[in-house]
Amino acid sequence: MSYKNFPMVPRVIFGRGSFDQLSEIIAPKRLNMDAPFIFLVDDVFKGKSWLISRIPLSYQDKIVYISASEEPKTSQVDDLTEQIILSNKERTSGVIGIGGGTILDIAKAVSIMLTNKGESADYQGWDLVKNPAVYHVGIPTISGTGAEVSRTTVLTGPDKKLGINSDYTPFDQVILDPELIKDVPKIQWFYTGMDCYIHCIESLNGTYLNAFSQSYGEKALDLCKEIFQSNKLSKNDAQDKLMMASWHGGMSIAYSQVGVAHALSYGLSYLLGTKHGIGNCIVFDHLEEFYPEGVKLFKAMKSKHKVEIPQSVCANLEEHHFNIMIDIAIGLDPLWENALGKNWKKIITREKLMQLYKKM
Ligand code: NAD
Ligand code: ZN
Image 1 (cartoon, protein in one colour):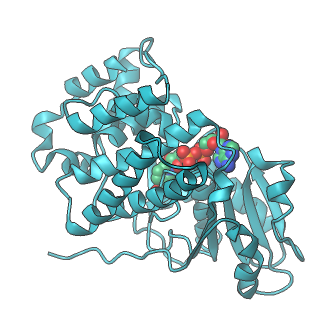
Image 2 (image 1 turned 45 degrees about the vertical axis):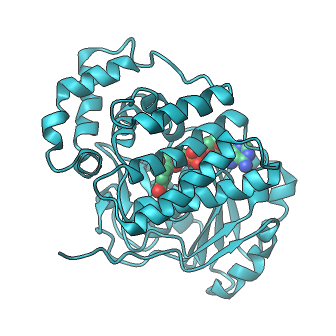
């Protein structure tokens, strides 16, 4: 038996207003005056001076605004990388991602591609990256995915949706400033927050569970219950705790795996472009048979916050569409094995997945 020796984010700062320390944090990492820091920023912040004016630009540093309306693609990462290389005469000192899971994943992927040849699609998989990435910093502005702690960056490529999982993927530095999530629209707060909740349920009910994952998963689940179920928290406390729930949820799956909801949601996302948070909610709503307790509580939180999950997203699909989703979902062996054990193929057939998708 050999155990995974996985890297963690080596530096993290937590606190309201900690974003203002960005300048002093990155300054020692500047290679020289011509080697810029590139700030990849969610374009939802364009013109929002409360945030943008605090980004410490000097010398050749640049802000690149990125839309989070679609999930990251390998072609997008390759284009961005090329644009950065062509527009600077020197190497890049660092990449700083400011946004949700979408922007954080793009920042991780670009930082890898700046030092590795070829296309990002070549590195989708496990441990394919050869050279260390450039220094990269993650600053979440919405919480739940755990992308700020994870060892992966999930990309949709020409023929698959799969992460670049490598020891070079995790951020070198994360800044957790709960003030940054203050303007997240309620519905998005719920969807992305539920990603964290679902990470906990899938990890805690998986066959890969171990004390490491359990300790993080239980803490994250407790925090999610406080945030989404109780009425006791102040706004600030709820924001602070959601940031930490996301962190712990991400740590929990680092040493286990996700499960049925993520497998099916990857299929939806690949075919229909359904985003991760909402896709997980659409799927999880129909998974009572796999996660009875988890789904029951999910439904209670959904009605407490008066969230309507989209229905009938698969209603007008044809046979070949279902097959595309099923191909994606059924190919995710580790997720199924975690959810259902080594003999998962006895339970999960193409027909079974078809039935499930037809409910959504
Ligand atoms: P997101 O980054 O897609 O953003 C969702 C929406 O919220 C966008 O419209 C964005 O502009 C907006 N937004 C973000 N911050 C805001 C703020 N402070 N105020 C107002 N609006 C704000 O959301 P997400 O759910 O965090 O990320 C989903 C992505 O994360 C997917 O691409 C998924 O694949 C990825 N993901 C990655 C990992 C990982 O470990 N790497 C894990 C889970 C999910
Ligand atoms: Zn997830």
